[in-house]
View 1 (cartoon, rainbow, N blue to C red):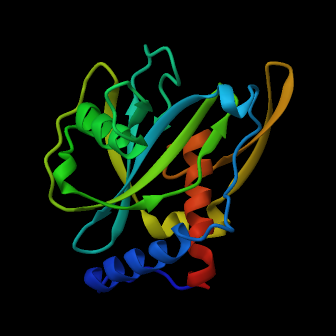
View 2: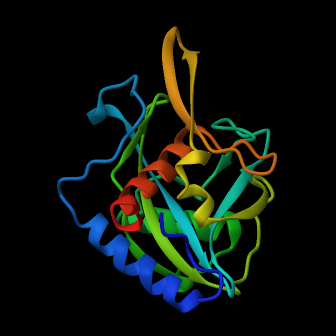
Length: 208
């Protein structure tokens, strides 16, 4: 597997843009989701921004740690995002709006590279992951009601299948299988890890 180079950030950026452009326009690739407990047509439409940060030494992925008092997915590690609202022009607009509201990331600083396949989750959501590239540095201002903190993980960590785990649990009386990608004491799992796995799939034909 070809690792992202820590010494050539511009090459890393160009590689990422090129390979994602190839993968995300392929109509044959559908990605993977968890088993939905509602009919897809009745799912609640949501969107998240998958923020890829172009730093001096490497490409990283930005995450939010949600506060523990929220109704949906309290305390979990996630991407900035939420439900599509009536005023949103598209799911891309939803992802950019939510990122601006949750972490203060100006949408003008996000270079949208494309969208991964919709990801269905058992709680009844259909999530559209919008992949965006952000040049560092960038301003942040956390919404303290929704976001406890933000942190970043090197992208190459998620491109190594040795870091992909699969777990099984029971959810509403049914077995649920999900991905997890723990990193330095942080348990990245569920839809967030599943979307990361789809990102890995989108790139794997070009990285090994």
